[in-house]
Length: 111
Image (tube, rainbow, N blue to C red; front, side, top):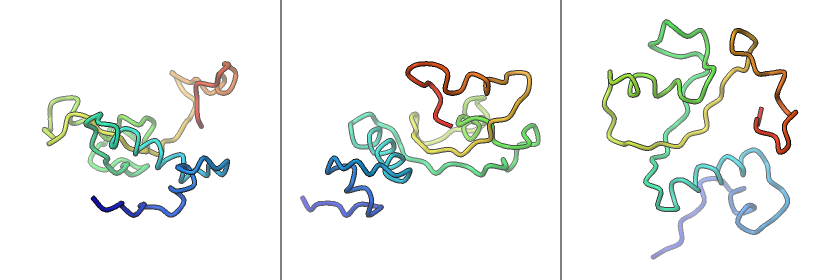
């Protein structure tokens, strides 16, 4: 079996144990973990920060927004498990938790 060429040249940095963990390396390591460790996840592209075809949302405020139609049973997808990196906007409001970001040890938010 031939060795696969990394999708991103920085991916090799994480594999070699280097301390240079850029945002690209962290994202790639996260996605690869679920896809390559037999966890039956499909890597899917993150959706737009401004949701298409959803008039109930002004912007993407959670990583699950892209799966809303599947979770509501309105759409059937050819996979049951997915992994993605989803940009989202953290804003104030009724369910605002921004004041808690970074206060827990270990931190529970990566903003």
